[in-house]
Length: 298
Image (tube, rainbow, N blue to C red):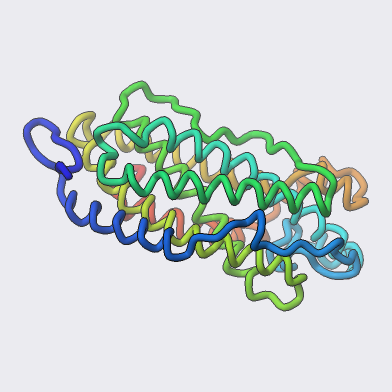
């Protein structure tokens, strides 16, 4: 296959390494292929007197509200925060698919085009699985507000490509942070652990793709648009990450969990210093990937 892209007469570095990686990822997708419609087992119901979401991942963790809710209140909250996370994933996966479909046959994505077909198929499966969980056990899918994957505030195609694949990398890295924690948490029902484990296995490949491709796209954009423009993208992505974390503070969730004044609680939690470490930890891997790709805001 031809080099990744030609820019001002100069090929971007590591095109062969990128092509080799995408080949390995495609092989792994074939090797680990599964049919979610037949292979995933759904219990008739999940008991309410257990945690559906790891307590340490709840939006009230590290604040006075955690202790005030008590065990029963935390379990109720964990049910709806579980539904909230998978709801956000339903819409997020949809938008990721649309971003990839838009770019997958562009010349600058030539090395990744074959793997993108596996990516789209796997994300479609995830979207179905998450929607099934929400509808079976919560009878609803929350509509996430305040985050738009695919929004492009820049006109240059090189910068648009960076944002598209950086958003994929960020969204999936944060999601995988939760997946890895919950897939081994014995306090959670088996179906929850299984769903998180399955998602993690696919996402580990998607994250590897996103990091490698983003590095190439960033170098390409620096050559075509200049360092200052790329720094502008980096600043935009910092805001995107902050907006993404706000999805975990959903007043509809607090209402469904029986918490009084849900909007007041959301505002208090977003300002609570006890949540800063949680945000930093959840975003740590995504931030590292973005920085290693050459995107640093000054």
